[in-house]
Image (cartoon, rainbow, N blue to C red; front, side, top):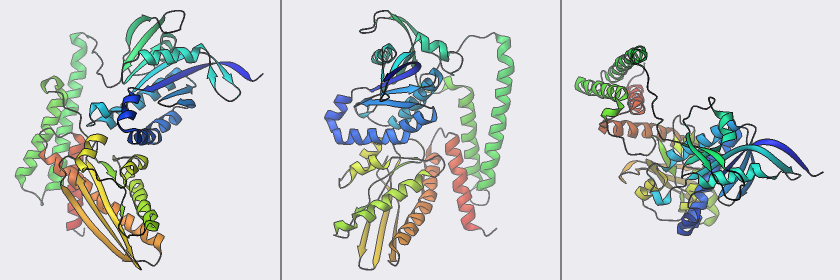
Length: 413
């Protein structure tokens, strides 16, 4: 026989408003979707032992070994999408609805899956809100107590073309869970422990800022940094005292736009593209960085687009653009780092070398660019955090690294 029956966890995902997104700008929407698949979705599926059964244009059917794997994968993807959509206008965001069910399926000889197990997951996806994950009761019982998330019981739902009602549970990723009431006596010990940790953090943060800045900046700046660190601790201890912050682009988030070929010879396009590719790869190795995928970046090739618009659309803080020019035996590479929020040029550099070994030259130029950019990005982040009224731990960390770099540049010890 060419088919077998088995029990499987099925995840069905679909893009919300895909027709509208494609109608507005099909080329860019497809490029962004390819980038999301290569950078976020496919790695998450592989990490949680999933198998893509089929892709249906704007949707996917994925098989997992367990409901726990399926839910954890869905949470990872939905969380990643929230980060990538930060700062992107609502009408341009790529958001998913997800349905998950555990049930009996029929596996065809070509690996395709059919049966009620797939159909119920697809119908659960259809009733999910944008950015949410809906589970059947069978799937919910498998993950209850094993996944750190609060599910809302939506009760019995009549799903299209499904004979019997299905009890549905929903999880909206990014929504804070409702706190459970506890007795006063149970609050005392945790609060004392938290207070002790916060005091220790304030002391450590203040000491670190003083240590790195001593000898380079006025004492008044150290006091300001310590006050900022205290502010972080106070806000962490009392979140209700502060207003919720608007989503902003991630720290160290950047897009490397395709470098322009100024040689007047289209045969040299490959060299400019290679510089772009290798820079994208090297910058992605910086700890904590978020670099837009190559496929997405290359949708801007040959287009004149304002850096601030790119920042809003992709949710990045920085834009790197540049050009490559080859003239006989010399190559000149220009690069500019732009603040995507203001459009201000933060840094620019020119590299000019003789061509002896083109590939060796390319590696040298990319390495120099990447190393310099790494320091410039940290410097820019530190300056941003210096202007922030509510610096977070990453802001303080960037300040420390910037001070360390300054220290290394000014001392031989």
